[in-house]
Amino acid sequence: MKSLFKFFSSLKLTVVLLTFSMMLIFFGTLDQVQYGIWHTQKLYFESFLAIWAYPAQAPAYDQLFWLRIPMLGGYSLGALLFFNLIAAHITRFKMTWKKCGIFLIHFGLILLLVSELLTDLLAEESQMPVDEGGRSNYSQSYRDNELVLIDRSHPDYDSVHAIPASLLKPGKRIDLPNTDLSIRTISYYPNAEIGRATNGAPTDSPATRGISVRMGLVASPKAVTYAEGEMNTTTAFVEVLNSEASLGVWLVSNVIDERFPPQIVEAGDNAWEIALRFQRQYYPFELELIDFSHDKYPGTEIPFNYSSEVKVHHQDSTKNQKALIYMNHPLRYEGFTFYQASFANQDTTSIFQVVRNPGWLLPYISVLLMGLGMCVQFGMHFVGFLKKRR
Image (tube, one colour):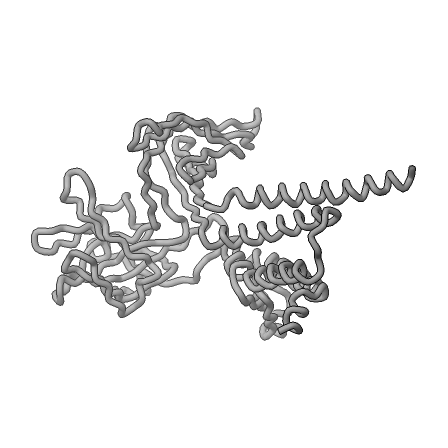
């Protein structure tokens, strides 16, 4: 036990872990060209083990295609650095006034590691597009999808059953609670090309109802894209069952949206709209876009500012609030942060990045502690130096 504790408190282990961290950043940066920022972060920094493969577009790929380099992922390195720092404090450092600056620096570093873990586990990001003069009470993910069946028969609200797309495994059957309906996945494509069948292209489609039959649409699977600004067309063929009776096989996709007539599943006296869409998160308030401004440098198309004047309408009217959201000046409301992310439809639609991060304050506190620790430690050394000069 003592030897294990000595190993974890070793300064040599610190140097090795920092070296591995630099390697992880280096190879992660190389793969960012191929996979984009988000997927690279998942592969390298939000994992316990990462494997770098020689890229297909690199020179001499035919000779080096076999090259694989395994390395510790961000979670493993973060955990080892955390234990290394704690063990070093227990074994080598004694709490004295002369070393209080070092303690503040190390405590700030520990807090920074903890805040990064909390952000990875708890933070949620989504987007909320709002038309000028319009309102929205939900945001939607731009990566995750969900299959929904919506009962719109009630005049005051919609009854929605949502199934995460990650559960749509071919052959798997999912029962909808409080109904006799269930969903069986025929096929699922993380990315696909949808269109009418052309001459020479396969026309086989398992769909028996809905838009695929009406418009003669077929789906062809294709490679998943990780490029920034590109969207994967998530697509599935699903069979709707009422008890054991089949109500047909339907083509659903995140590009078959409000621009198309709704696909309706009829089960007795009930009717359900079926769709595959980006995962939504609803709020107890609405965000109204009063005015959107897009300012450019004179004589150019280069923007120097774009901002949104908004009003939040809460179910509790005492919480209503007006705000101006612009670059680096978000709106913080009810635990959510609304950033000005983009715009669309010839400057008539503003797109907000909605972030929920319960640990958002911890990095500020950790940086403040580390800065304070450096000032204290260097200040004491500076005062000691001046005393020796005298």
